[in-house]
Image (cartoon, rainbow, N blue to C red; front, side, top):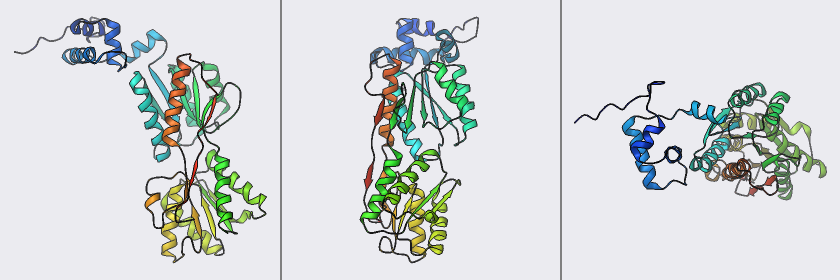
Length: 342
């Protein structure tokens, strides 16, 4: 027997939440919470509400709900890249924390461009989200003012600051760069180079830490730095390694600012018959997929990407609920993972 066509509302021609609640035999509030996936609703009620919604072909009107509350059930997450595994890992962790609370994330990709990030900030704040999670502190003055004036709770990730009323989760990029330099010096490397691409603020900060440690040891050589704004990649790592070793074959230690560059350097070293680490030691950054399986296995800095996303999301939840939080700056640290390449 063909079921009757669900009754439509006169205003929109679509089934309403009230109709879903009546069919499921629950209150409208319970139906709303069940459809948003809130953990406070029992599984039996969730099943009944979801079945009623399917029977009525109900689709939630997010715009109407946001208008009624003057706020949407969303959190805006701004990252500079979605092709970099660093940020995909962070975003996945944020989603895992927020989704059980009925909160969806709006992902904004700025492509490392200040103007593009500013446009995203304006767009999201036009219909204010519950909160925001943004990457680092380097942005246009206009974007900074928009965030500060919005009243929307915001957590900054990837970098740290002790500035007043700023909530942040990350680690010291400079300290990580220093740790790499100290490691190369300790294993006897005396001609240490730095290779970096993309040149976002965090890349430059870790390079500054590396440079600072070499300067203190009296072993910094500015001409052993290769910096390019080109996107970081394995292929670029091959190219820059060959360029450096062809020009300066006496180099015996290299810090590459991301693992894809370092993996490329390992490939190119084999093609050039340069032994790693006997002739040159190679260190990467971020401990990306494949680094532990390279030949030789890549020494790198492991960064707490998933933990950073989880912690930033949990901190934002506490702020949005008006709960007391501890220190506004959460330093998750980093780990120098010593393997075979250095």
